[in-house]
Length: 205
Image (tube, rainbow, N blue to C red; front, side, top):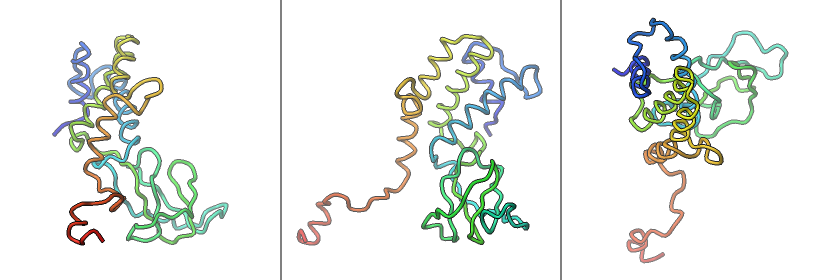
């Protein structure tokens, strides 16, 4: 099973540094913080198949104060980044717009039940290879600055991971990973173009 410290150590070695070995090693807190920043940025920037989940939200017993809406719900602690959609029924087919976010961990609505779709913080062992490579490149860029104070290496690695300038968060290895991940998603558009196989079966009608 791939762990956080395994990936941090790999990144350190690839940057020419000594591995930590354990999360209790001197200086580990700084390295873990770099890892956490990079991980949260990448896991929350795209609806990856490995970390896009749907959850039923826990409704608070007390009514909202002040009463903007009728009910208040707690957002799960596993959620990273912004929620992608809320639903009022468990079939989760049509998102609702009747809600409002308050702070980091509360959403209010007039719906008595609420489901949330969003990016969740999953363990590295569940990341596909293409996603792992993006995160490791970004971790290496953070470590290049925090351990070696090498801004040139940091900027180069960061550009390789997520692009730079006008392609920031749209280029680099991240763009390739997004394309690979999207291949596993069903198309939301049906029969947008002429299908010759269907036309042959129906006589062109």
